[in-house]
Length: 463
Image (cartoon, rainbow, N blue to C red):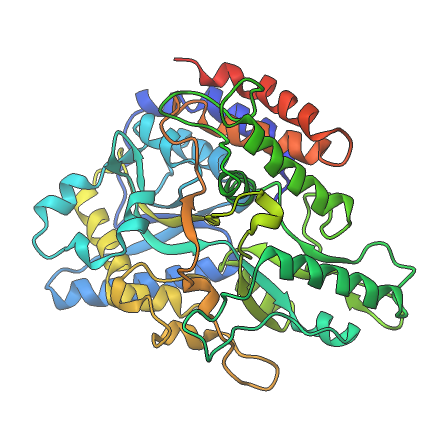
């Protein structure tokens, strides 16, 4: 899923070379609108459907347009954008996410959309979930892309894994006002132990590569949410401070969170690698998937279905006093968004905005969300009666309960937690923290890990 350590070098090269963006010339003149998207097969299918619908939409308005696309490689998104820009092949519209949005906004690669929004009487920002819109305010409080999808971290459950070992997987209590009120970390840890016990008494007992879950603890939407839930802090962009520093007022809470993360690995409830094995199988004649539960987001639904994995879903468990030591607890869940930006070097910005606006329209949102890889951003489509909910079915053909994707019993926190730090180094912070957790969570004490993280990021927290 994420080759984080090897990605460090790519990030650093992006930070160095992205300065070329600000002073480069405009795009080469071209016929029609060009959209730069991910090379993911499903994104290509969605793009073809979108551009065909957009051409029809514009024709009905009396305008004939042509739309084509080119692609970047998902795993090297930022560097590929650089290469396309240098070759004057970057699209007028760019599919993007919140990950590098601050940097590309700062370097004037993306055009702010606030002017288009305020001057377009046919577009109403209040039709969209405000929290999702806020995730696109990447720099200087301006909107730099229009979110097409909203993603909070949820748990993907491999139902065949649970069936194979004879353990019940977590399900919502549909009779309760809060169907997931019972789902706490206490219950999750009990379940992890139950899975281990079942494995130890099964034909899989000799295989050490099977884990109850991949908690994805090296991913910033996960570790930052845990740290914040404990009352700690990863980075405070306003004060340029970090809870990893031993004399910080949030240090003890941050340390407690790291201890909790470390315990998940020590107890073998989750893997200590950074490569998901949710899709892999082991076990000779009696093959079983390596992982029972996976902390991830909705775009991976299609990945799982394409790999013939039968799914159920649960939200992130709530933390209790047993974990945090606090009587009153707030459990945070990381979230982010993906959408479409307008290239600042496009010679067709008005047409580009029309395409972005169409993707955000109800027709566009249905095309995108019914593809199975996103939660819509329009308020009137963010409900369990919307058509996108029917996109996942179990092996008996029944629609799978997807309430976890819209569950509001947790407090959301933006995955790009260092927004507001110098945009040129924001991604360095994410990569530095991830790299240290990956390399040291299983090898050094929690306080040593905190100190090493602080050493890695302290120079990025200077004006």
